[in-house]
Length: 96
Image 1: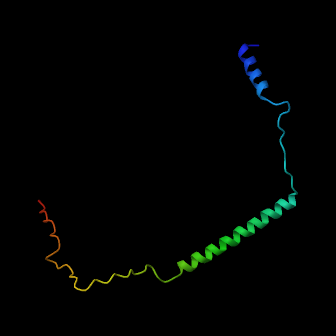
Image 2: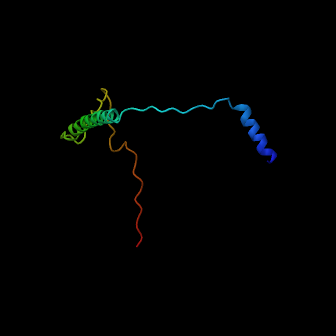
Image 3: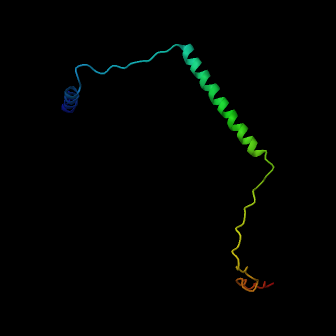
């Protein structure tokens, strides 16, 4: 055997225990599994029905958008007149 394989094997044998770990398996009845899946499916379907009902109630309201309440101006405040507004940029003439 080539020497590099022996080194790898030796390092494996040095780090491994006398018995290797064993796998395990949890086994349940098929009927218990099916009953669990049925319970989960019923739970998710009823939760989805609640969400759909809530969404339909919001969707079926006749309001498209809500009006925002404007804040009242403090007494003595002056609204800007057209002369106080910023001037519009000059219109550019079109050359034919």
